Length: 362
Ligand code: AHR
Image (cartoon, rainbow, N blue to C red; front, side, top):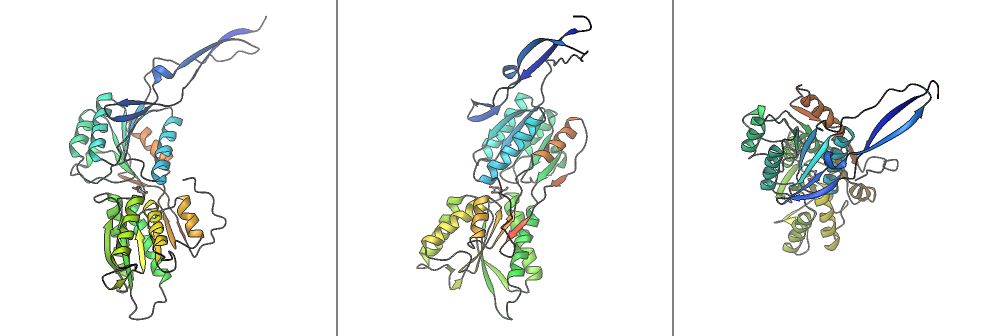
């Protein structure tokens, strides 16, 4: 037909993510070679159109993502947020779940180096012990961005930067809630605290603890004391175990020695839910017999807060994906990123009107 031009439009579609087992690590990857389908369509166009041609041989950007595990709904949301954001940038994701073991994470990072990924994203289970493998990544010229938890290293140049929650502030907010709740305590009155921390040597647990304790000792006028502290490893089962043992050991009472526990500060919602089960079983009313402050903001914890069985939930925001991808694009184009970036975080407590609170989605 006069004035019409035959043009080719080349499109491609991607297949679903699929799992490949390799050396004990689960790779959750999108393989560009396997997933590109070409549909070549001959069509009649009324007006001249630009020809769109994708080059199937162009190497995709591949990011290796080493996640700690899947210990909580918070973690699952964090994983999904990062994978989805990476995909929507068109990155291929090689995902490795460390199942709570540092040695698995080190092995995963080494696999990423061998695989020659373009960037490594890495949520470190603990703070220390990473220098060796990170030096290998540096030698291979692969930039590393640390997410969620921080690392301790002598050589700051081993990583491009960190993005995640502000755990120090989360601890401070938990303490501020208590200062407000007990503002009217009379002189001489004291409150005893049981602190159940997250994974030992994780930056998150250390900073939550530090922020919490510093705030109370600066502003609590000696009226709050942490009388017992134990690591629950961020696991529901451990939260349950610790409280069940204390109750059993003390003949059904929630106390340490002769001191009644007035407040429980639990470093995450998963442990808190285990604690609630133990208190229920022991006939102790959470939220009234004992004040409970938790961290994360999972839907199930917010539901308990609404029922009066928790007193405060400090949000730890798992949705780092979008902000993280901005940083990834910067480092991939040779730019520098801030040493530390944080996500926005809120606090929900018994003083708030929670009826309008949107569903949390995790
Ligand atoms: O590092 C973040 C913490 O890890 C979250 O509070 C917790 O739920 C997760 O296990």
